[in-house]
Length: 129
Image 1 (tube, one colour):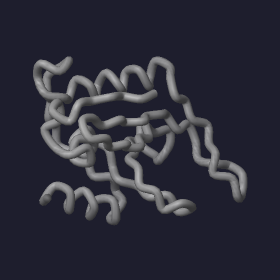
Image 2 (cartoon, rainbow, N blue to C red):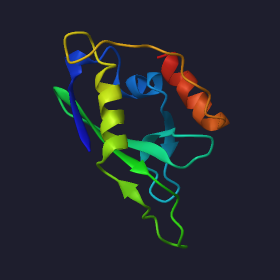
Image 3 (cartoon, rainbow, N blue to C red):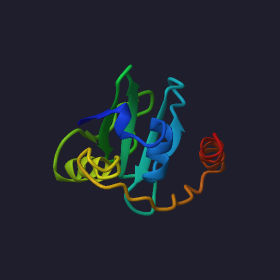
């Protein structure tokens, strides 16, 4: 599901916006493409997974729910859900974190540690930008 947010409705750059919402930066071992993930529970899966598309006046957050990791060798596809109640709830949660007057009130909570030292270093770098 795609979430479109005007740049003026964000208090920070898109990466910081997601970090403040509990997401951690991840990078694909296969493609090197960066994205963001927020686990739902104790392990790595299931998790919300977001790609950012930046445009001149708006940001598109392309969000889906990864149910599990790819289970075949050499295959990067997984069981992803692009709509449904959980995805819709997460989109609503992100919308509520935008500036007041843009569809919700901003709620800031401390980001949890991901447990991954590389991801935590990246989050720390973003925090200090």
